[in-house]
Image: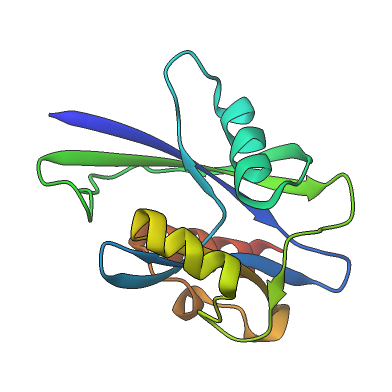
Length: 153
């Protein structure tokens, strides 16, 4: 059994909007929280900072821990692998420069070039607090975290 650790950030802006990533991965569309896989020798908070920098060129402050997976979740992409996801609040330390979209999966030329090179692409958008729910994200663990956030905050 291989266990993959993933770290995600919940970034809520001053307008009470939640940042999500719309991604095309392995032939399917997903809306998820920004973040990604932990690399060997890396701490979870450093991983999240690196992921925001790689994906959005954004420096973030990693805040409070929200949730760590406490049940068995098989990988959606790799048979025989288990996923453990760790979620933190994240705060932008600078204005967001990455292109932000108003509608899901609205990929621009840069993102489509990424797709041509890798077969995968992503873009980012904010969802208004009143429209945000577990139904707005795709992955099972993200849905749990979305419900937790809506209930507690």
